[in-house]
Image 1: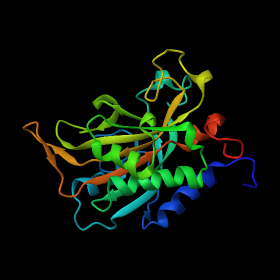
Image 2: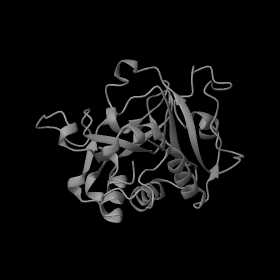
Image 3: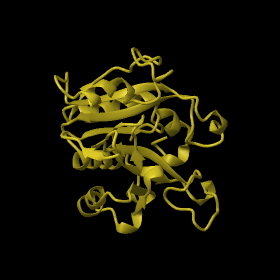
Image 4: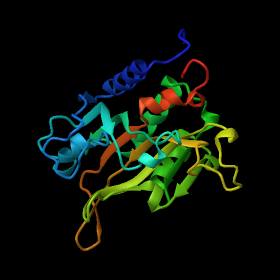
Length: 249
């Protein structure tokens, strides 16, 4: 790297270009006030503008997408400014698959981008998987080469997404964490990947919606599992210089 810093616009372009090279269509950020969606006051995540494609994956304009979405959240205002993980207005980078690729590609590309594009040190990284997701665990461990000591299994509260309502699409998650050092930690003996303090910062969430939770309380496997993988806001990266070695702030 010739520059001592990475401005936000470079992070955006590195991310978008990485996924364009892998067959994704770049989709502009949707408005902060969602169009035709009475369930939300503001666009709070990158997947919001793609909800219809997830729910009805037929006659799709594209099978893979990538975006930098402007988001606004007001549900956790009491934590904004106190941690590195809570924001009001921010940008969320994401890649999405509508019945095309699934866990293996999502995991491989996330790791490739983090290591080869952002050059984050592997010894600072760890991952989590849903407690019953042996498939994701095997990909991280056997194919990516993450040692078992760096993979934690977390429960439904932390590593299972959805459904948003009483029924709907849902599935397990897998997250990538950066160890920002013991000085950022809570000091508890139990502090480890998944702790709510600022030491282990989850910055990439790989969401694997592979079920539909129906009215009978049954998780029906989707015929075409989908993917959305929001990566932490560029504002988070800018605020926490410990996320990157010098040259990657």
